[in-house]
Image (cartoon, rainbow, N blue to C red):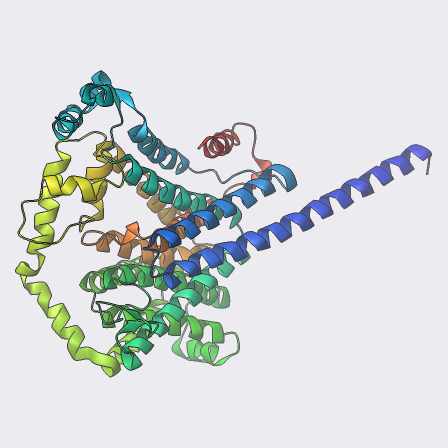
Length: 510
């Protein structure tokens, strides 16, 4: 071998050593990010859903650390192309709308793009000293401090979505994350059942709750219902993946299913089924009508989706067994109370207050149609239009869609609708393809998101960071699953890398 060949070989060895070292550092950083992400998802329900200012700061700090670690990995250790998805566009657009609401604008501009904002602000500030100077440059939002607070939480949720979307790309990492969510949800569900059976009406047997602690660690049973439905979806997703891996998309007889469940490999399936049963029973025993109805609607939707795919026919026994298990658990723990609660669905007077609030919120939105009154301003805007008989102060509309319409206007709702449409297109792609077992996780994730969409018609649970973070994880995993069949990220050309590069720059700028 001549000296040139020896030099070349040594250079190659050095290059391989450097690559191995970078991969080792990237692996450690990936594990740190994963531990931090799971800690963030677990902290949400532990901290009552994140309803206090201190817990919000913890969530923002954890999400910011997650994003910082991911960017360090991307820029300095092991750069990888980002996931190609159009969800970056509506996500950044929504953030920019909130930033625009905070930007002080001349009175003439405010009057041109939102005339009622200028009129109402002039009426509210009439008689105060230096009112003309104050109104000479004013933001669109009616309460900048509330808008900044909500924007920081939205940024935290967006950071979690971005990290999960670009870090969880292979089946093993996706299954680990689904398992973590299933364990967290199952634990919260078990605690809720324990408090129902042997509780003293307090959360953790220590913290007073107006809802007799039927809702696990959450103050509001409807918010608990949303969290559990998302957790059930994650458990169902992993269960379907394991079943598809075991049976390779072939038809399964009852004897084969029983034999599999008795085997060591079937232990994880039984544990996941148990987590789903516990979660479903906990939702029903929490007596949240929205949670129960949305769960049933999502179950029907998922069952139809499963039966419509030839490769997954014969898997209906999974839904049947889980439903039977949940029903037995409900019969044992308190069927009568659940039946009485569901019977109130026929009483339309039960919804009078909520529908009245929705109608008045729509009337308020008509005053600020394009950009809304400002992110996070519902609590200060709605009282000006409240003509109801309720004595309490409404902090949120009992409808996520109307709430978003009032605070961010048509433009904000359109960006959210576009984001949701892209996510459901990703769901459809995974369901249609379905060749790889990991793609069957889309059915479970779709279950959770379908339940959220239905429940949001009568609740504001997505305003809780604990629920919003979990929803972001489900959306990110759905898009990652749909992207898993595309070309290798390493084979992308310059044009393919343009959108991820722009997304990186936009995130860093924000």
